[in-house]
Structure formats: C-alpha cells, structure tokens
Image 1 (cartoon, rainbow, N blue to C red):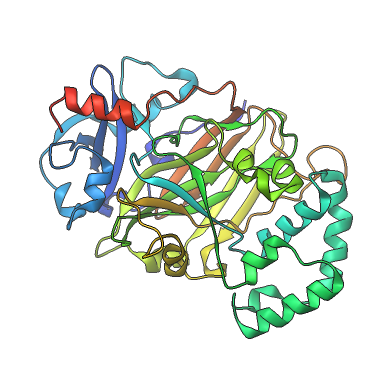
Image 2: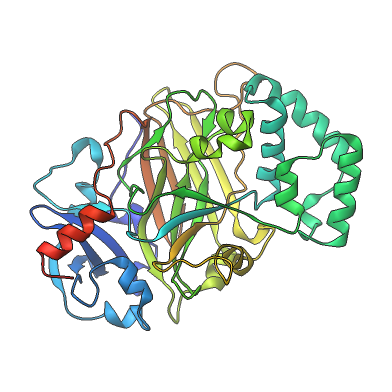
Length: 391
C-alpha cells in the first residue's frame, strides 16, 4: 500500500512555528470550528466575532484576531492522524478544508506546458492514444517558446495569426496568450475536501490527472489575505471532448481538495513568497507506479494580481470572498500502462502536493460516487452556528 503520511512533520510548513495558520476542524457533538495552531496545539478560535473563516478573512487584522484566546482542543499530531478518512474515528476531531463560505474559483491555462497539453486534449478529442502524435505535430508547427510571450501583447497577437493560418488555433491558446484569462467555478462553498480525505473521479472518466496548485484566499474587497494548496482534479477525456463539458470535468463530488491550512499574509509571508514557490507533486499507486512533478510559480504567464483582478472588480463581486486556484504547469505525459496512453489515475493512488511555506496536501483517489457524499452545505452551517449562539 502507498505510504499515507499525515504526521505533523510531513504536513505542516517547514517554518510552522512562525506562520499564522488558519484551518477548520470538525468537533464531534459541536460541528465545524475555526482553528489556529500554537506550537503543537490546535486552538479553537470560533467566536461571535469569528464564526466562520469567511468572517476572519473579512477582518481588518486577521492575524491579530487569532493571536490570543480560544480553546485548546488537541495536538496537531492527534488531529492529523484522525484525518485519514480510511481510519477516521467519528468521536474524535479531524481536519476539514480550511475554507467555508468563500466561492471556489480557478484560473485555467496559466502555464505554458499545461497550455500545450490542453491544446493536445482538444485535438485528441478525449482519446489518450492520439496525444503523442498530436503533441509532436503541434510542437513542430509552433516552433516558438511561448514562455517568452506576454498574454495580450502585440507579439502574442502575431503568434495567434500564425497559428490560425496553420489551422491549430485553440480556445486554450486564446486564454493562454490572449488578453482574457480563464476564470471558472471549481466548486460550491463548503464542497472542498481537506487533507486526509479522498478526492473523487467521475466514473465516466478513463483519462485524468491531479493538478497541483497554489490557491490564494481573497476577501470581498479583492485583497489577497492568505494562501494554501489545492488539487484541481481534472478529467482530461471529458474536457477534451468539449470545453462545454468543463463543469462535468471539474465539479464533481470530492473533486476539489484544499489544505492543509490557510497561511495568512503577515510580515514574514506574502505574495513575494508565493511568486517564488515551487510546488511538488508525488503520486504513488497501489500498483507500484510512482510519478513526480514540479510546478514553479515563477513561470506563471500572468501575475497573480492580474488573475485576481480578472475574477473580482466592478464586473463581479464576491460578498463572502473567494479562493482562486492559480493553475498548474504540471502536464503528466509519462506512460503508466500501454505505450502512448500517457498517465491516468488508478483508484487507490496517493497524491501529495507540497511546498515548504504551505505544507502538504495529501489525498487518496476514489470514484466520486464512492467518496463520502457532500451533505453539510451553507444552510447546515447557518443552522449549526445559530444553535451554538454564534450568529
């Protein structure tokens, strides 16, 4: 069986002692709690002032609000150990995704490598066996380092004209190097799963992959207040058949993972750290297959601030804030089974996404139909908080 390490040393940021971390924990008999980490102790900081993570992110000083007070509810080691969904004890606390009422949005095609793979998916029409020959054909036609292009620039427009003339223009190239970023809805508020949980694949898919990404947390004023990690699980065959199937490819039960904690921006951590982050991916299967990848944020095509501005502004408001997956450069093309078939998940795969400043997000792969059903939505949260006298 693949190793499923949820120890504190494996999951927490390397400088966790100096980080302002916010998460959510399910407390049996009580419900979801907003928590922070002080040393090795998980502290419940839920209050009438901070009934939700959303309310914390709207505060003028989120870091100050979690610095004092609260109730110690256990050690981080014990709570992480009980967050392994396959061994979860419902009578003890466990970790949830660290967001609640925020909209869950994603930016697509923000790295050149993933951009080319999206073009290949489209031309392959969801058939993985066609990908290798199409990849070679497109590489030969482009003959241009797209990483040097600034999206929306005059040079990018000239490249577009060349590709249109060659018959290989794509909707993915449009959002990759054109003036407008792709922003889509990954999931609904409270639908995300956290570290230790299973991530889900729609059972119709036979060609799919993880997408390791940095996720920024944005409040209703459009201010980036923190960051975490995400797995934007993708069904390559479904999206490859038609971009109009994006919802089916992206938004399914347990198809979006976020965690382990949100790290708040403070004097020692901010957007400059995110811009330098290298996100690693490790997939280990029950069949012994192992896959490794890296995604370097320094190679993102559009500045993070531009992606956030494409999502929120006079054209679109988010009264409860939102989180934004920033995209991935990871494009798995290694053959797992038959030559030319590339990579696809198998049930039981363990996926670990990590970067030193944010820790690690670890999940097992199952079918969406076999993952724990999503039953606790915003309505349930409001009723729960009201019963607890927090609203």
